[in-house]
Length: 400
Image (cartoon, rainbow, N blue to C red):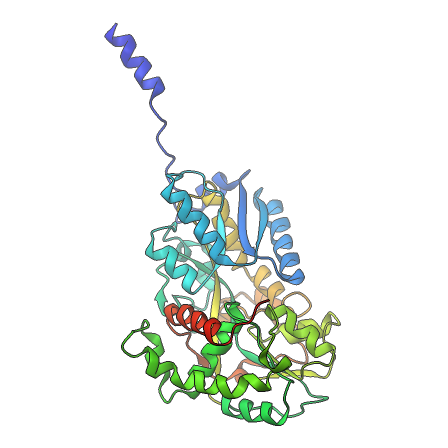
């Protein structure tokens, strides 16, 4: 009788959770990934980006038998909240999200809450050709990555202007302020907490502070008011001279270019040095549009993907993450006819054939060369983005 009870108990016992795949055993990863479906939660506000993700899905299906489903987000924080809710509910084995396009405060929050699978990034085969010494891909808004997310695109703030109406570039945020006074209504930026809108606020601070190094540390209640006082003084002067007198703002970065094309704006901001060339190629901007950066440089960062701790398709997600760092995918993303994103790769580490993919690209008439992009200013600690964005809404926010 006892023997039968023991057998029954063994049959009724919960099955042990499957071990996570080992990113260092790539043959095992590719074998496990075949047939998996990866739900990639990624911003869905751009047709060109959506088309690129669809192409990635076609390629990983063809080469690895992995199905990629793009879950279109308007706010990455929604995905973070979903994973956190699953952890609190004890849903630890097969979560709804397998991969997230992420960086900054969202990555910091997931890492702090132990919501990420890893470390995995530096064990992926294509990490060998990533420019991890020359590009900021091992820290994310000052937070050490430590292998818990893998890079797939580089970004840097550029200012986009129509030279038919605004022929000259501007060298500083103070010069931009003076230009808006002389040309009221011809500049705007997206309304925070939109990522690009908050980035504009950080760019103002980085450019006007005598020493922006203080922004590398987390926000301190003791110093916050003193550090941000120049920002609010600047915005108090700028806001009345914005498009629609600062009583309305574009909702997102993608809403800026149509305002230039329609002649409502002469100047806007972008976080992609190749975005203007891509928009010109797609007939979304006139061919007279060009870009510039400030004399002291502009803020830059990397876009990453991360894998939640409870993904049921971790092997498939690593396949996608690794493919995103491949020369094939990186060259396609850098093509201004596709995305115009900056590459995370080290050109000197590539084979001649892979290097030729990049050498063949025409980056477009509005894309600055690496030398012209100048100094890449570091992102502030993510806590600055959150607090500044909240305070901006209190001071200047308008109902959308």
